[in-house]
Image (cartoon, rainbow, N blue to C red):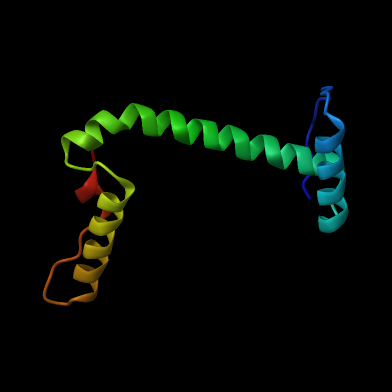
Length: 97
């Protein structure tokens, strides 16, 4: 674990959530603070991802990407082409929106 300057905040948890945090801490051998910090980091990352996805959707739709499966299909096709030595390798810039 790395040590860094930290600040303390106070949050209120309902009893069920407090119990879940305590159980997770015990099961993973981490402190309750570590469990909560990890949960906050993950939630913030998810919120950032959802915001980015919302902002980029109009651009993706204009390029024909309407579902996640559309993107996965093109990634699979690209990987297949990379494995075939007769087709030049493409990089992620080829799929830039």
